[in-house]
Amino acid sequence: AYTLPDNGDSLVGAVTTLRLAHEDTLAAIAQKYGVGFQELLDANPDVDPWLPGEGTVIRMPTQYVLPDAPRSGLVINLAEYRLYFYPPDSNRVITYPVGIGRTEFRTPLIETVVTGAIENPSWTPTPAAREEHAAAGDILPPVVLAGPENPLGSIAIQLEAPGYFIHGTNKPFGVGQMVSHGCIRLYEPHIATLAEMVPRGFPVFIVDQPVKLGWRGNRLYLESHRRLYTDEEYSADELAQLLAEVEAAAESKTMQIDRNVVETALQGPTGVPAGVSDDAHRNARRGQEANPISMN
Picture (tube, rainbow, N blue to C red):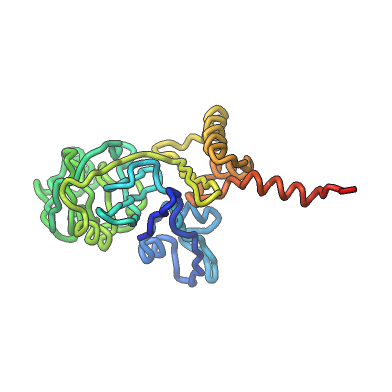
């Protein structure tokens, strides 16, 4: 949970580091510290996820640019596999990693509302789910009752959008990855907390924002994630357009940007916010200090 900046800034949290023991894996660390597996991979691209090694220091991606969406309700940004919860009558934001729909079962980009919550839900498999399980030799019953075999976990938050839930999971490794048939999956402790606090009628916004921009004071930050459902890199035209958007944002506060930092963040997304601007006046002062004026 983070206190929202009172000046309208969009950056919360701080990047931290963690020194690993010889038995640690990134999958185990993700579950232990409540972060998503994919975001941990992206934040540490040079670390072997299964054999990182004794003493390896990793970055914990615990700093976030808030999505460009209403600061109310639940905001789920698919590109970063993350949910942002703005509690009612509070100046806070609480954020959790989530699992989302696979390529063939994409989570929809929608605005909807919470209609209720179900403890120990049963699961009625869709025809697609039944077919998929049957192909793997697992014949599903018409209804899967609550228990360890139920993929909905212990609690399911119902949405007005038919067929979609925000729910727990019996497979925590899938949190932070594309694993579901379109629903949103959370770690069990997270869904238990969320279900207690989210009222009926609470708005839900599902967005896809792989590139986010936000301010902290007079510094602009860029947070870049992999694009969903594609392995294609940005084209030259797309990079030029994104660069223009960053420059336009910086100009709103008379700032200059470091193009190299921007291009590096876009071409090698780590999900870790990078400072891309500096105060133009500060830059000017630095220039004066580097090239002092001789006064007669």
